[in-house]
Image (cartoon, rainbow, N blue to C red; front, side, top):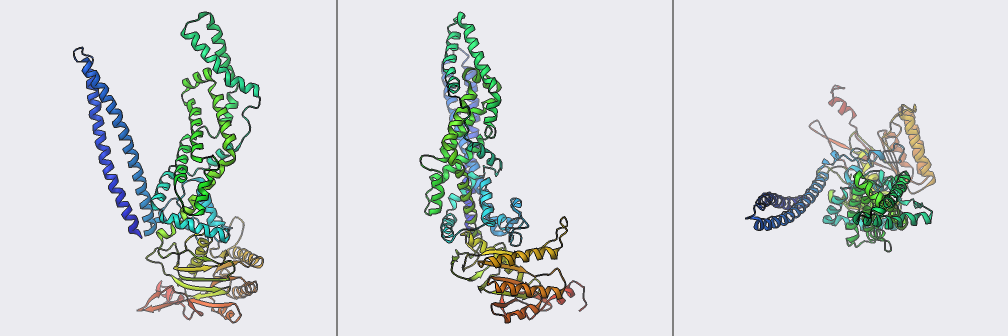
Amino acid sequence: MEQKYEKHLKKQEDVLNKLTKTFNMLGYLKLITLLILIGSGIYSFYPIFRLSFLVSAIVFLILLVFLSILHNNADQKIQYRKGIILIDKKYIDRINGKWIDFEDMGYEFINSEHPYSLDLDIVGKKSLFQLLNSTSTYHGRQAFAHDLLLNDYPINEIAERQKAIEELTSSIEFSHDFQYYASKIKPNEKITLILKEIKNTELFMKSKPLRYILKYCPLFITPFSIVVYIFQFKSLFLIAFILLAIQALIWSLGYLKIKMYFIGIDNLGYTLVNYSKVFTLLQTQSFKSDKLNSIKNNLTLADYSASSALRELNGIISRIDVKSNPIVYFVLNVLLLWDYECAFKLEQWKMKYSAVSESWFTSLGEFESLLSFSNVSNVIKDTCFPEIDKESRTIKSIGIGHPLISNDNRVCNDFIINNEIIIISGSNMSGKTTFLRTLGINIILARNGCNVCAKQMSLPLLEVITSMRIADDLNEGVSTFYAELKRIKRILELSKSKQNVIFLIDEIFKGTNSVDRLLGAKAVIKKLNAYKVMGLITTHDLELCKLSSIQGILNYNFTESYIDKNILFDYKIKEGEAKTTNAKFLMQAVGILNE
């Protein structure tokens, strides 16, 4: 798996070395050409050498321009290869476990009230988001986080997403190209404000007579003034001056209105160029899956092309940005009412594209999310597309493992749950909690149409709710035990109202005494069993395992073995209740108890 990217990386590095040599050679040639050009220019001042050296100077000037173009093109190719190399290295880091150092962890999406995200490491440090995220735009990050946290796709949509993700998984060259060009765009929330401005189709100026005056006055006044100046019609100087002064006054009176109309988009040019490149890449790519073609078609609705529209908007913004040169800006507005012309152009653009412009960016975000999910089978061994059966009440998995555990250390299990409640007992560190997270995180991937970390898996559409990492809240005066009670209450309420629920509870009621814990745990399990929902509960209380006498409740366990006073875990789930404990052994190991 890693070799695929290392091979691709080596190829890119070889090309980069050749490009670097070409770039350096062109640099030397430019320097030599420049020196010859300077020498030819100097000698062309001598009458005896004038013609020959003047011709020489022109030839070498043309050559210098040509070499400069080649040099610039070589530099762009070098930057492209460097970007692709960084992407390859990032994939290698995902495979070898260094992804935990990636900066983007999706911290802003952390919500302690979410049904499962904290417990299953969906966002935050060492999370699924940190491992898979390949998004570069604001809408991409939002779409990927939404899919991870609020996945509610119907079966037919999941099937379409599976086909799209499978296609993207095998399109390494295109995937790398997209990520390179998209990386030039920063995930800035400012884009939402810009879209709000773009969607605002309120007319810049409603008065038609005034619009005609502002549009056509410069077509008469400016040529008239230029003719007067060129042919020195002194008798008309005053009239020309007054007319230009009137235009200057009109511009100054509307300056604040124009400034407000341009707010939010006047400094967007560089960003739009990058968006346009990404849209062009998507629009020109051939896709097989209906989902990807649907996204592509959203960028070319009717005769509206996202890439060409943004290039057009960028042209308008470039004209607006002439204000960065105050002298030119003043002259253009006095002669041509430049700002008004730009405002009318922008108004026209909004009227044409405002209704469809937001869909371009949301479609791009949807594509980036799918691309992030396509990373799963490229960096995780033994994955498959699960079968989703709406009518089934059974989860079947062969070789299911935790996708956030490295490929070399992952231990996989075969597991079946048939609309049952499973009580998992076992020793400390034996793998109970990890198995709960394994099942939960793979269900989230499956709900998104993504590959799961298993050799084979089938499951129904399920909502996941968990109670695992419970913390107190000092600000609200909530203890750990009460916080867990609130979470268990949510699980009971959801399970009562819906049957397509799977709950994952780790060490239920661990924050209270053993008598009350056992009493409460039994009551919760019996209620959940009565609601006919499936779920898993881990426990150290072997007394709970006696509930297996009730229909619909089963016992499973994780155990350990001892060799030469060393504890060994196989992390394999087994039927039945646990027969061993290791708390005494561990306390002896750290010196709390004597042997």
